[in-house]
Image (cartoon, rainbow, N blue to C red; front, side):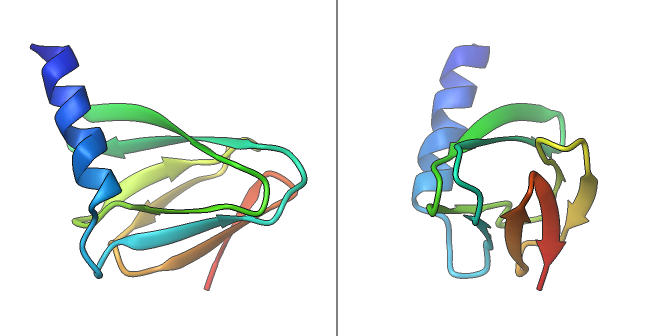
Length: 87
């Protein structure tokens, strides 16, 4: 059941609504982010120079440097040197 739920969440992330937070990786390497929404925890890889839409209804985000931030779902976040810069 957890696998089906995880797959469903990944599909939802792929078609995230306009209100989702956008994460852009400004680093030269892929950034692995940990996203916690409610009781669901997943890892998302953002390629160097790439962007992903996450957290349409808010979440907690942990960056490669260990930064942990709360997002409402409408922020623009840049990953710079493994840390989050919220704009």
